[in-house]
Amino acid sequence: EIDIPEDHPRYQSLLTRHRIEEGVENGITSKQGLIAEGRGEAFDYLLGERTIESADRAERTAAAYLLRAEHPVLSVNGNVAALVPREIIELATVVNAEIEINLFNRTPERMDAIEAHLHSHGAAAVKGRTADGRIPGLSHERAKVDADGIGSADVVLVPLEDGDRAEALAAMGKIELVIDLNPLSRSAQHATVPIIDNILRAVPNIAAHAKDLADASDAELTDIIDAFDSSEALTAAEDAIRTGRLS
Ligand code: ATP
Ligand code: MG
Image 1 (cartoon, protein in one colour):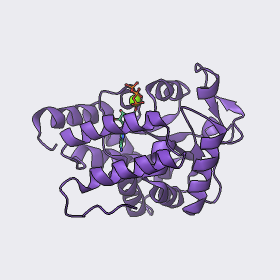
Image 2 (cartoon, protein in one colour):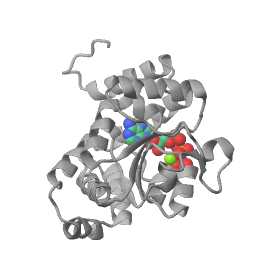
Image 3 (cartoon, rainbow, N blue to C red):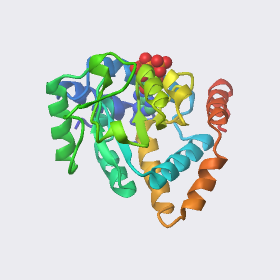
């Protein structure tokens, strides 16, 4: 770990960059992941690097969906593994979800590196190696999922997902919870719940909401879900970016 002074005004963004850089050095994150990080940072800057109110509502709704799910799966790619390994494992525990490694640029080496990285942070079982399921409508490598993982999930959390795959997963009828700082990205547009927030803040906040809702009835969870409006969430984020108002 490098030494970043915590009182530096751009502390979080410097820490994020460092983690991604380290991820690339350790074979966890692809070089493409560096570019994705840059795009994310730009949007976070415009949002004021904070969780806007509508994103907090989306995070609570995501928690409700995960708690109500029959078979929830959290999808992990190279950026997710580098940025929030502990937090994803914690969320999986709180909502009783599975973790599946899902890579846009799938190589055996990166699958191994991410799996080892997650195990070193305390993950028990990690899916993604079997790859005996396919997402219809995608080319071979990008279509691969575990049949008993994402393949049969009813609710999937897909942070920083590629737009094509987000669209194809939605077409499979899955409830898709997307974390993406760009409200205009196709991933966010196709989501059941678009979470326009930095994954560093979003994942712990979903877990906090899930803990808070642990004793809620299915009816209470459904009320939260029914009250959520995805296009309103996208508009609120775009508005916050355009006006600097924190809605
Ligand atoms: P589209 O969805 O429009 O097809 P894309 O999928 O090709 O775009 P990518 O650059 O592959 O775009 O996706 C990366 C996405 O992840 C970007 O929208 C970026 O804003 C977002 N992103 C990057 N870092 C973070 C982060 N730390 N937290 C949340 N979102 C992030
Ligand atoms: Mg996208």
